[in-house]
Image 1 (cartoon, rainbow, N blue to C red):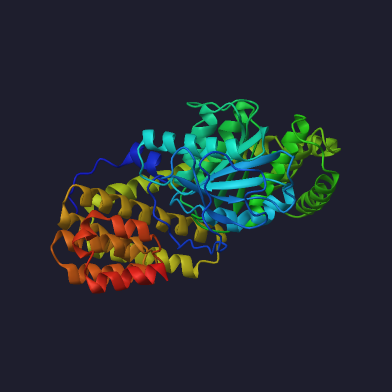
Image 2: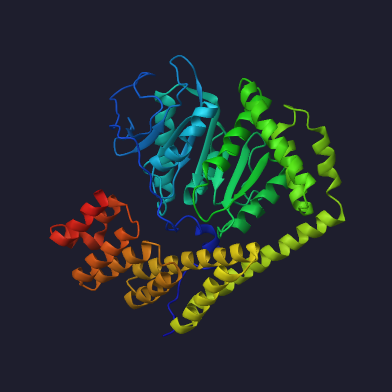
Length: 478
């Protein structure tokens, strides 16, 4: 069977939505501290929230339908103002980044909060309303330092964070985890610091590299941190660099008081790593990056003149050739992704089965680390395209096409719960509640945790009194 279904989400739209509608490729779960919800009809005192514990739900005063997770650092004291970092998760999992990065909030003395409402697939007006209510509630109820406000997000949430910093002059820094943008179309202010984080197996790696190059050309202070991983929130050890750069930029701009214990310890560790890389046998781009990091982070704070000279020395013909080769490989990867997107419309299941088996075999057997990461990014991209096509077909009630794309989705990304969840939706459209419940149960076994989504899914409304359906929902609650 060939896939002839006509879709509107290819090429430019695919780039725009590549993170905005992406299902999680590995279940993201986090155990929040067992704290109650907090709300107040008027105002809240500085000490009304517990310190050093993730509060999973603080209800917004202006709109009780909205809430956010909150973490106050252990150093939190009444009468002092604190830097704040507003997070946005692509699945509205407010507690998730806070449980990952609470140790960083403690180290750097930041208040961190994450919306429980901002998520993928919302319209622009809804996102504006959510972000405005979220920021207003935190700044109105907590002792936030207005000179040190930052935003960050993952995937579609990173795009929300970028949108906020482009519109809100109070924001001085943005963390974009697994999603970039085009600074030539939407330039950042020069007083904004940009930190990108992306996994080596993330299908958005090329986009993030292009964002960094454009920001470098625009003279915007930025760093790109590539961690060993896929399309996911960065490990705390890598996210630490974002908190550090925000802090150092705050010191440079005299918005933050200098903390010598943090400055000295981070400088010593980064200098050791830079010298190690410079003394090794790494390529010219690795050596350049080691010097560039020292200059971006510590100029004006620590003596880094030698790194400035070394960085300049690496910008000769060998550096230019290496950059050009990197650009060639990036273009090759983009071209291959576009070809695969077209082949979703042209190739049949046997062809895709052979192609997916080939990619998986290469991933498992190649000794070339870069090739392995390349193939994993390709598989992640194919998972995304399968999801988007299946979702679009389902929205247009093209059930046979949706089933075909979901068959590919399962083949490409079997651990992902989304294919099973969408198969359950298709089954209900076909008036097959038994199959729907079975598929939903599979989704839960694969890590599906969004209870509200399952409860509110229109296709599942006829099952609200079905015992087997409610047994599956109980597993999600558990």
